[in-house]
Amino acid sequence: MTGRFISFEGIDGAGKSTHIQAVADWFRARGADVQLSREPGGTPLAETLRDLVLSRPMGPMTEVLMIFAGRCDHVETVVKPALAAGKTLLCDRFTDASFAYQGGGRGLPLSVLEPLADWVQQGTEPELTLWFDLPSEQAAARRAGAREADRIEQQDLDFFERVRAAYAARAAKAPGRIVRIDASGTVEAVGAQVLAVLAQRYPAC
Image (cartoon, rainbow, N blue to C red; front, side, top):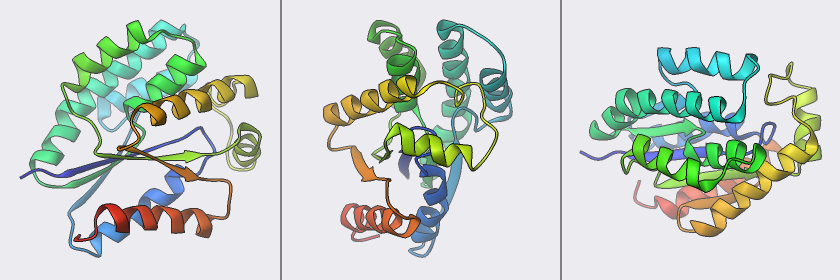
């Protein structure tokens, strides 16, 4: 059996995490066996690395290596088994986030990121990525009212503009996989866009 792999991407504060449960409910109502995960994280080891990445000072190269180390464990112990079991795997971030944050935000070149992605993913890639796009200023306002900022969320607006631009570049290169969601509206308006994409992509589901 081969499952579905759908990732959710966007800068911090774009609201992607808010809509994962609604997507899970949509698939479950149609009989799918749904599993949720996230990155960084998704396994005990990867969650430990996540805590370090989000709290300890470190350079960009150390940061990306820790994220890909966690992703390696996540792919082997969660992603591949879920897909082999025919599940619908919904993941809050995947490799696109590394190209956006460590590539666009931190400035690491593709010559570093692409080999890491190839080695770790071994061809495992989402079939659909929902990219929740939001202006950096609006995302910052949402974050400020929601929680205390972690190490990455504390970056300035220029950092998040570079991240957003990198997401846009990824979407331009993979228009069949990455679908832009205008995340600037209400939860209901954004959710309607998401459900419309699902209905179009999975009409027989």
